[in-house]
Image (cartoon, rainbow, N blue to C red):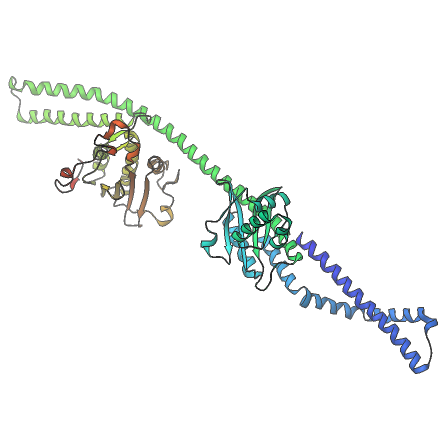
Length: 529
């Protein structure tokens, strides 16, 4: 559209100038012949006007090509020099917009081209934000960020309503004279907020999606009608690019939401299957263990009546001890098979961490992995779902163990940060660490570097922690292990009445000053047998 407009405009003006020059030449030759005939030969050519006119036209046609070339140079180097440059820049910009699918990048490209290539004093792009139902500036040239970063225009503002109704460029000095003084003042205020003298609407299929706001070059008060028209033609093409970028963003958000739902369904199915398996295994193993332990204890009770060899007695004691340990593991397996719908309650972090690590005792003992636990007291009780907390911690501990492989160290630290009113859990491993490229993706659903893994463990952990308005992040240098840091706010406002301190309602019960000052931090280093 821009090309057609400029070609028609240029062709018309060129024909007009060329016709005027040729007409002047014909008149000049006609007058010249009459002058020469009368002064030199005293002959009046009035009776031969047609012949003299035809001769003049003939001579003018002879010099037509040189004159046409002269007019072309005049257009190229003088009259249309700046317009051709502006037109070529807008044409090139229109082609560039097609391949951009990010609104901010589109806005940056437009304002920088208008500002740097077309030498405008100010250029900005205003777009409609559906989430807030306001229009906000995405990018600006010639303005300090503080002037436009937080600028928002209501969709009910007079300027936005005019753009939507008229679908035409609005120039401040021309449009304000068409309204009453109150509306004119409101329009001036809107223009001043945008620091613009001309606002070009971005319209796609009768839907206003934003505007391009411009201030002319230094020394100019306004744009020429030709410039405004070319900007408007460009805005029509730019509106399509912005609409495509909006659709792309919506598609990306929908895809991310679909991935979350899909991973949620998969995780729910996996959790249900694991819960059923854990329940079956726990019951099937627990019953024989109870029988074995009971028989061994009966034999130990009869040691006064029956003289046992010392070695036999030690074996019976070992059987009782190990069956008790195995029964304790099956009991904890049953904890993890409980429903996620269990109620929230006061949770002891130290107990949860110890119970969760105990589930991995057999695996870490086979892989010769040392587990170091540090609890920096006092640690207040935390209000939440113990099943969810166990699952989140188990995923972190499993990730650390699997990252090491064999022969390494896992360090677990739990502390209460009083200044932030939050409990912090750190899980560090001595594995190979995480590369910088993978570090930003570790919490993405289905992302994994281990063959056969689902890639859902850390994602599920993140969802659980975020559900309590907490945060989880990973820190790592490749070759130097990794550390996962969980921060959970105590959030005492969500406590039910029966769990609040009677002396200070709404505050979670925490250790007294005597308890806080009693003894150093508890540091426990264990090698799980």
